[in-house]
Image (tube, rainbow, N blue to C red):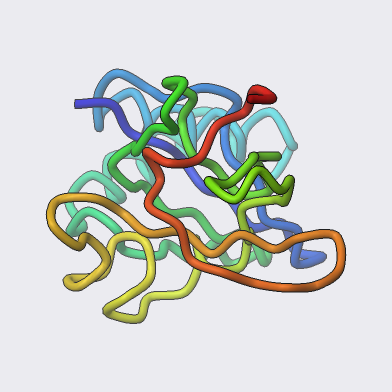
Length: 148
């Protein structure tokens, strides 16, 4: 099962690693590489932090002392098989473009991604924000990154 690595920068920006990652171990290692590549940690400490993240339950928000936050979630995919990530530009089933709300990926409520009630009938529902500010929840499989 693929996973996504969500990271929140100290300025509050929420992003995901570019692609879905094939294993939980790989997602944790990428977290360590992010800290190392940004000069926040030594390589050995980044590896220890990755191992520490693996010992946490899936979906736990890991808070780094320098303001970075990380979270690993199971990947869900749009109808055209693109991993659903923060800020992804999608067309909903009303044929309107919007973006997948990034904030929901770092919230830990029961209805947010990774929460116990996030999946409805086995499918994740994501908040999509349109250009006019309208917000609506959609089944991820009914979203697409291609124009219909």
